[in-house]
Amino acid sequence: MNMYVSNLSFHTSEEDLKTLFGAYGAVASAKVINDRETGRSRGFGFVEMNADDEANSAIKGLNGKDIEGRALSVSVAREKAPRSDYRG
Image (tube, rainbow, N blue to C red; front, side, top):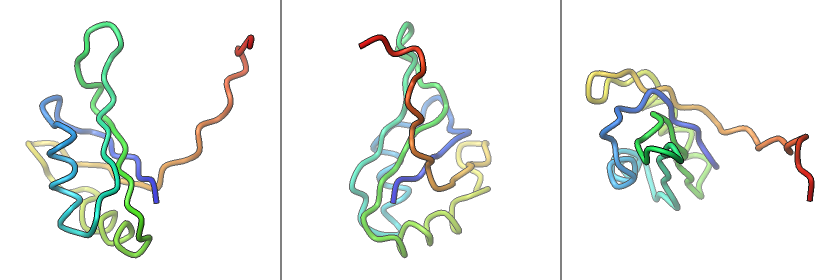
C-alpha cells in the first residue's frame, strides 16, 4: 500500500521516514518530495509498505502524531491523474 505523508518537517529525511514507519512493519520505499529549483523538501512524501495490515496500522498510529513539532497527516495515496497538458 502506498501512503501519502504530509506536514513533514523540512528536516525530515527519507531515512527518518523509513525508521518511523518501520516500527509498524517492513517499508518497501520512502520518498520525500523536494522542490526542483531549490532542492529543499516540500514537506510531504510517500511511503510504501507491502503488507496492507501493517500499512493500516501505520496510518492509525502515525496520523496526527507530533513529529518535530508538526502533526503528521498520513493517508492512503491516490493514483496520480494523467496530465491533460501532455503533448507526447
